[in-house]
Length: 402
Image 1 (cartoon, one colour):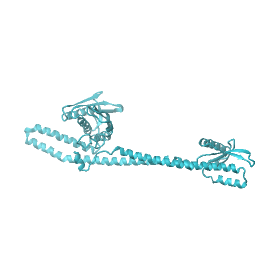
Image 2 (image 1 turned 135 degrees about the horizontal axis):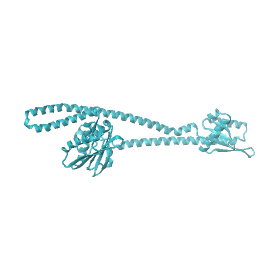
Image 3 (image 1 turned 90 degrees about the horizontal axis):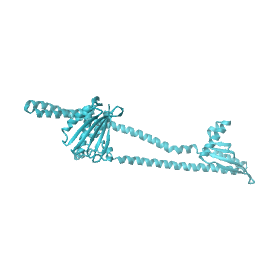
Image 4 (image 1 turned 135 degrees about the vertical axis):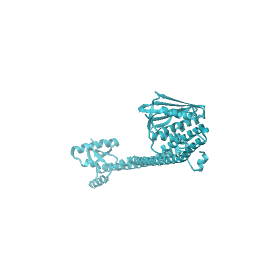
């Protein structure tokens, strides 16, 4: 199919540019950084405000230590106004005398309460240095020292972790959304594949039946041309195989345990007559030829044919194709298709199985896409580029279940 025809039909097979995905990821990353920076900035402002509030509390305590009862009433109002910051007031030896905004301490009594307050004092000391309050009498003499221990309020602690919780929820929602959209896209693609395959098989069925009838007619009409007509029958049989392949793609194929070496030999014999005579094809097996795998013979043959034809194109009609079969770990069978072609640049290897990717002037670029679908979805196997080196060749590996 020519490029002009594709453009005329409005068909676009080229994959989306991968850098667009990274632009979206980068944009989301900067939004996340901005959210964390803004929240941390708010946390710092609230932390500074709470520290100033405690310092005011300490200054009030120093000032009111020598004040009258009226000032003591004001001090009580200052302490009572603090509804958020956990505070513990201790004497010079560290024994707790007063606490505020520690609900658990209010529910305890006696020794349990002292143990809890001492534990909180140690935690507060790790978070912040206590504020020292010097008590001075009217004559200016120092008569005591107090320490004020405090920590972040519950609101500030929540705000500190808020951006990370928020981003985690957003990320989780994004992942779930991505998985759902990806699943829906895959289902839609599957319907397109199935519809296309079934319609192709249906369209091929009518002319194929007609060709079979014409073959029988010409055999009776021209008995002296029977050899040519037998070749015609071979092409008709080939069309029947192609129709069967498309029909199998449109439904769930039935796998069977088959000798994979014999299957590949049949494919090589068929291809050797149709590829350039300057292309040498060989098959090897280890540890022996008696290697079986669960395959759909027609679809698996399609995969090998696609790989070999791509290899022939890469070698421009001259070189060698070697197919090796060996037993791998965990009961799997490995099939390597190695050519001596021009190779695949490293930066393009990730695209070879994408729909529309092709280095040829003609073609849809669906051969390797179909191969990947047949191996991985229908055979529950794996296909990938095992090795490729520019100007030296490429090796594709297929894993099948033994």
